[in-house]
Amino acid sequence: MDFDGFLFDLNGVFYEDENIISGANETIDWLKKNSIPYKFISNNSTLSRKLFVEKLKKIGLKINISDVITSNYAGVLTIKKMGLKNCKLIMTEEAKLDYKKFQLQNKKIDAIVIGDIGEKWSFSLMNELMNDVISGAEIIALHKGKYYQSQGKLKIDCGAFVAGLEYSTSKKAISIGKPKKSFFDLAAFDLGTNKICLVGDDLHNDIEGGQKMGYKTILVKTGKYRQNIFDKSKIKPDFCIPSIKELIKLFKF
Image 1: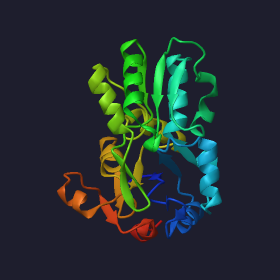
Image 2 (image 1 turned 30 degrees about the horizontal axis):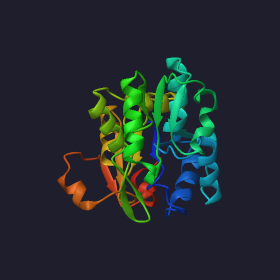
Image 3 (image 1 turned 90 degrees about the horizontal axis):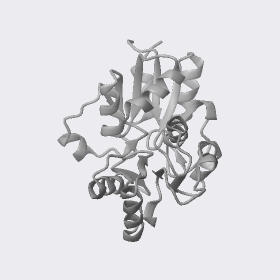
Image 4 (image 1 turned 30 degrees about the vertical axis):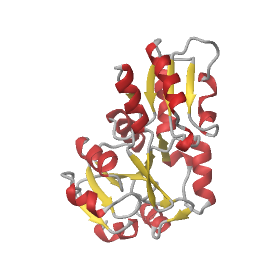
């Protein structure tokens, strides 16, 4: 084994919708029993980190807040580091709980912070944001995901709307979550090692992102995995397994 710890995606790997994926808790038990360092990394931006972990605990996943790094959490750290204070938050009310110190106080907008708002996207909202950016606001995207899985179907993600704003304003967004190097660096620092194996269901955000960092990668055939997309892609993981349940069989410690 030429790595010291794991980074795991959550949605589509350990759970989907309101259900734990078979083998999820057994994998966590195995990691703890063998004292293998691990962290969970997620582009979830619909909930504050606290509420996200509470949701996962409620459905039965053995997880602690100290184990989890989300794009929402990383977004707060980034905004603080940039010295931004007056932000227009394009996210759910539950996600805004992490951003209490950065909500709009006056008309001058330092940045628009974009997370997941599902079907609330509209022409009028995009037009409003375009004008904010033209007037000087930064675009901060908590992630630029292409699509996600819900109720067994793929749905368009916020990355498409971020790309639209970039095109219409000729301004590049500051992206926070996977597959950004800064996000992986934050996770690696928290994990305590750069010798990492990353496990996920997303070819671009997880597998390609991990490979660019020099990580070993494992793709699970659950969540947003689609065989036809995998077959056409040039991105190939080090290992491909049916589900997280099979991870233990790959390694002996």
